[in-house]
Length: 275
Image (cartoon, rainbow, N blue to C red; front, side, top):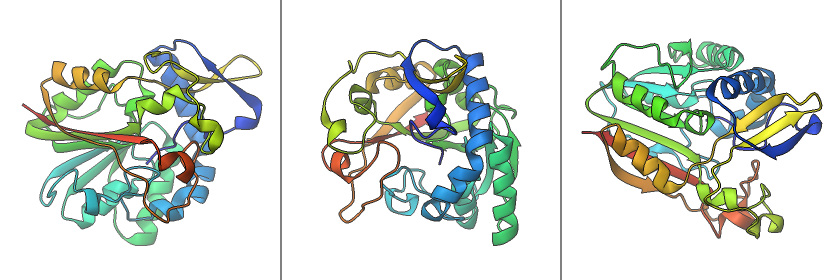
């Protein structure tokens, strides 16, 4: 699972902005940020994610409980934006043939480290959601746990690519920042409970350094935007999971935490099948 908003590699020297960013600039920023941040990310969140584990978001809900992907035994599964492939590795223990893809080479190096430590190996490749380096119909399931879909400017291209590599009746599931959160400051405490932006403002969240370089980008779409994108590319929405904050869960991660999490959803999980 990749980082939620405002956990970039060098937040002390960047400032938040909102302005349009194209696919190429988004990819450059995200690749640089994740390569720089991967070591800190894995050190900070590795225990929560587990070397062989599948959490869908900072709320900590596991795939074994949500069963978003269904029975994966014997299925070909692609994780897009896999990080160190913790989720794909867990699916491999459930009988899936799991493959991971990530834009960050350094994240994939951590995956190799975990492969060696656990003995559960996941094949991985460097790539981006808008250009999946696989043949048509290569997979039965494609998923992304906070790893890719909010980090693409060209969402239609990314969903079309997923449809292309899925076989007949394939399943696509992905988790992202719940769009209602973009109406509020990125603050897990009381300061994050005030509406300060329009829910309908699709302008990306951007972090810019002192040299005016874009260092991080996260794109915002409404719930309806994603439903329409999926429908355009032949998907039927099966479920939209809005995980509730678990009792006793006190972990703060970026803008996620128990104060706001008990009142509004922080994560949206889309589940769709290819028609």
